[in-house]
Image (tube, rainbow, N blue to C red; front, side):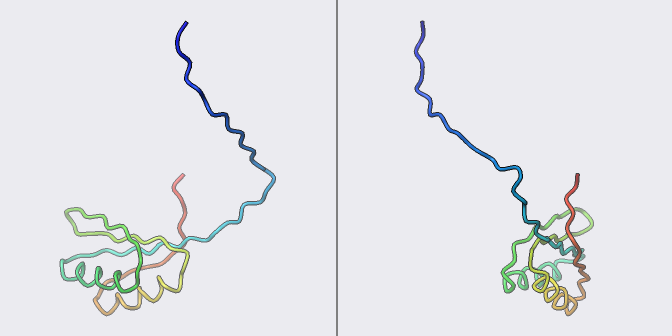
Length: 96
């Protein structure tokens, strides 16, 4: 016969009747056209302490921020207007 490795046995119980609290997640999206807008945007994001996703392509960059705090996102949209950056906040819906 061969050698058998010791195995830890784990028992996990899941209560499927428990109601899962749903959380509303918001998405801020903005298109960035030039390097100056990108610089200003990064400075504002640092001040607002928001994590973000920046997708760059040949046409510029697209900013995506997902957050549970709509007030923070709305205030960032107002600040971005000072730099002629148009941004919008909406409900985030997962792709299925």
